[in-house]
Length: 283
Image (tube, rainbow, N blue to C red):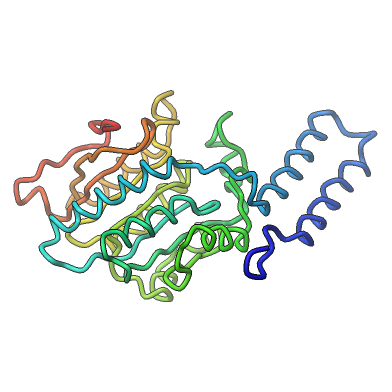
């Protein structure tokens, strides 16, 4: 226990566990081994979503923090003293990347920037069954909302600056949400929601919030593009095609499969090169 907060919600684990095992035992005679394995995986995910001590960070913390600081400095350089807007993250899971950005902002003396994370907190959506192929499945990477908050607190994150929005993107990424959160400008955007449809939803939600300049991180770009499957690359290509006033310039990334772009509005009019995402390299 840390400051009165349990590492996991035992009651929730017991409920999920009994429900899952009840489904298995009640029909074990009739069900195939595959169905049994599905129930076991669900139980494991239910437990993992609420347990802290076995969680392995999904991003390299030092490398991603350094990449965040580089992005912040790019914004300072291009922004001519303008205020840096909110950090929006799509696909929070346990919260490692959000914690890294929090610490990078603090190191750059930007302790007033809000950090807003969007996640189902139930893992990947049902669409992952079709879009994820053999790589991802519905429910993967789930982390309960309360467990994520506890993890962020343990990481030294000031939760007063954090707003976590729970729900499927089709329900939460709306104009009403922008108004409710008083979102006006997003300068740092992390798209870590793995699949094409979710990544596309996140990008189009952000477009009205991109001012003169922003940095967009893609954590799962290479996992699909490297094998010729539709994913974040195609989502970004569609985004740029839909908004030709936006230009994208690749920046160094923190992982081979990740991509980072400096996005400017109207940049092509001022001599900046408009690129397609296909020209991007890991950096």
